[in-house]
Image (cartoon, rainbow, N blue to C red; front, side):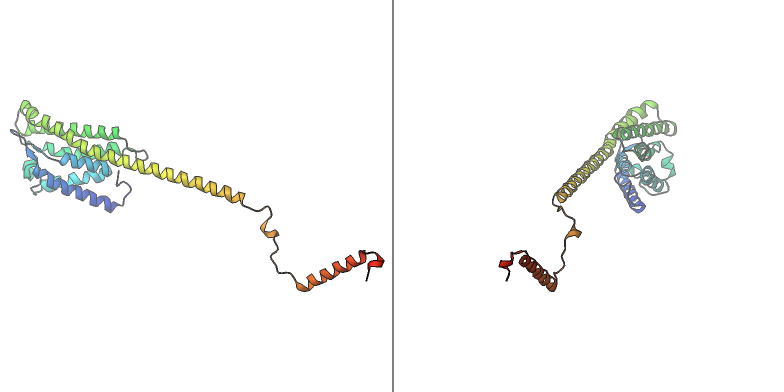
Length: 249
């Protein structure tokens, strides 16, 4: 949401930065006892990316880190790497950050013309966490050769609780961004309304100060001295003629 209207290269830089954070976070996760599963901050990073970028750009970060790990870099959970680890019992839970970034962003940006809603984003995060952990549980039972009780009791429950907590980080980032944008939009509207009122007030006082005569009626030309002298003589002659005969000189 924060980078929705930014150029494509800004979104690319943010996605690559998110991929870098995922690469750093996955190997530092805490392993769960008895099962090949790890708790890390990947879901939180994916949720933050879903809140900041459109869905395709948000998915790019976890997808890039996952592909780099599958093809040899030791950046998957616990510092593991390779296709063998991905197709072991732990591979299913690696898809949760990808689903969080994809479904969370998809629910959030479903209609670009509408304002993103917190309830829609929260629903997308919950669905992504639920689907991701369901896939991880089935994956670990079938490919990890573990019982349902072991997987549910030692992996799924703890991963779901951890992912819900980490998902709130992304939701909090979204809520803060939404609050700040709404506050800035409110103040922009208030400033525009105040400026409009001031403009109307200035126009009103300008009309009050206007003269009753039109500017073109004012004669600013310099008077002709000969014409003035002739007019003065004619007025004087007229006054003399109006006097009685015995007053005329």
